[in-house]
Image (cartoon, rainbow, N blue to C red; front, side, top):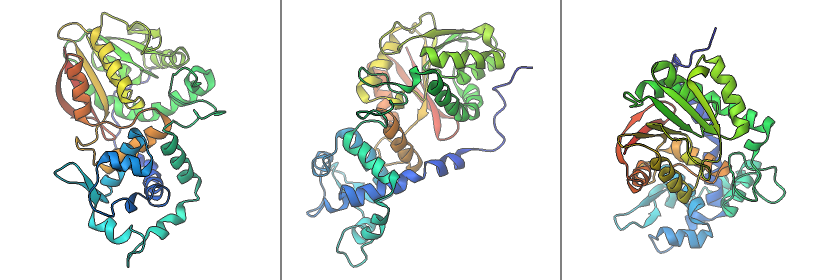
Length: 349
C-alpha cells in the first residue's frame, strides 16, 4: 500500500512553525540592543542603510536581515527619502539614558548561547558550521566549505527533517501550482521529492526529474517507491550551479531553494534554469516572500534570520524574485499562497 502525498492536513501547522522560529526575535532584538547598539546610531535623526552598515560594522546581508526584523517589530521605519529612523516606541524604550529605557532589561539575554551564536553569524556573515574547524555547513556547496549534504548520515537526517514541512505543504502546492498540461517537471534541489510526488499524484500525465546531490537522492528514491510514483520519476545527481541541467522539461520547480543562496547565486541559478526551458515553459518559485520594502511580515523576517544562520541566503521579497525572472527572460505571474507563509510565483518563457 503506497503512501499518498495528496491529502492536505486538517489543521494549519503555521502556528507551530511561528512558535519554533520565535526565538529569533529575542536573539535579533538583544543583538541589536546590546551588541550592535543599533538604537544609539540615530543621534541626529534619519540615516541611510549604508550608514547603518558602517556604524554597526555589518556587511549588507546581515544588516538587511537584522534591519528587516527590527522594522517588522515596529522599532525602525523608513521615510520617503529612503532613510531610516527610530519609531516612537524605540525612542522611548530602547535609547540608553531615557526615562523609560528598557535596553538594560533586554540585555539580560545577551549571555545566552542563542544570542552569542546570532552575534557571531551577523559579524562573520557566514553560516553555522562554516567557521574554521567547524563541522560543515548544512546546505552549502562551496570550495573550502564542507557540506553536511555530501555525507550520507547527515544528508539523510537533514533531508528527512525538511520533509516534515514539505509533506504538509506539498498537497496545497500541487493543488494551486499552475502547471497546466505540462508533461515533464524538473525539481531542482528536490530533496525527498515530496513536492514532485504530490504533483505526480494530482497530474497523472506528468513525469518528474529530481535533481540533487547523490546522497540526497538515496532518500528521494526511497520516498518515490513509498508514494507509488517511482515509475514516473527520474533521479539525476549533480551540482545545480555547475553541472548541465536536465533538459526536455516544460516546468521547473524551485521549492524553498533560492532562499539558501546569496543574490548573485540566485540570479545565476534562475538564469541557468530559464536557459533550458522551452518557449512557453514555466518556472515555479515556491518560497516565502518578504514585503517589497523589506519591513516584514515579522514571521518571515524571523525565518529570514533562521535562513541566514544556516545558509548563505535569506528571505527575499516578491520584487526581488520578479526582477530575477525578468532578467532571465521570463514573464512573472501572480503569487498563489500555499501553506506555512509560502506561495508560488510563476515565470513564463
